[in-house]
Image (tube, rainbow over all chains, first blue to last red; front, side, top):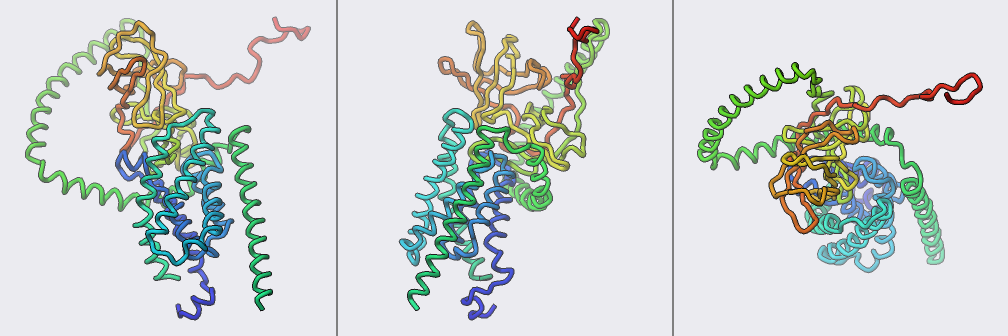
Length: 168
Length: 291
């Protein structure tokens, strides 16, 4: 695709890539990767993907797409409907409000911002699930998933960056 | 020019805010339905899993091939030692087989004498685990068999080592199985050695807790836990776990089934409860009063 077309924002089907890639990552989150660790602490790849695309191409990941991704993730993962929808909608709200502070900064800053945001979102999800279950859930599993998700941000964002340069 | 740019930006921001509140309201309505209402129908969740199943099955193929390749490479160095262990184990197993065959025969004869009905439960389907679910909050797996294979909700699921869980959301091609380690799982069990009954409670952790065990029970580390059959959901005598730790009143149980690395599972055709009776049990008499 010529550079002028890319700049003008006319992307055609390539414009659906962020949502498509996030959908694929949602399915990868469901795969039985054959170890106990994977079952108990799979990184939240969709949160990583949404944060990355919203930080680099926010218009390609609108609220409707965040809602749809969250809905499908809730249905596929088997958690109460709304848990992941709220997380992804808040991810978009957070990035759009804070992007001006970290846009153009190095990857380490993006990683740090993601880690802090993910901590708040996992804490909120834990709170919602505790309300639904009617008792305070164990924090261990949530904390482990936050750690794994934060750790995986860098490699996943690197792959998404290569994809973005290739396609958009 | 700058004013036009600013107004466009403001309009966009306003539209974005409207969209956020619209979708957030929808999300909160769905959450309220889960908290206060009947929740999202399980049947629809089952069909949503059917949509993902072909992609999951396709993606799982190369991943499983890569995993088995890695395991083979890792296993080559230990092959001599493993062979030695397997030879020893084989000898012991031969002795056990002789004993087991003798006991089966004896058991069969006694059953016939006492007219005890058969307890073997046929499987509805043997299925492959194609997905794991729940994230940090729930413990469930997705299997590639559904109502098209005769599976219904609330059927027990086992692997070759013991109880895995029960079916909850049934689609046409796929079924979600709630694992016994899930927070919502309660399995009526008994200690194999003493026969004392209790409840094995899931915690969303790799281990479970044993609750409601009689205070005078002589439970020990290493005791095996099997299903008691109470409640009618699980058949009796299915291995569930083993006591690994006793700290005051807390009894930790390690599940015997390979919950972290499930591959093939068997859905058992166990429906001990009769279908719900539609007509009243007590027939009203001609005056309209129950007899």
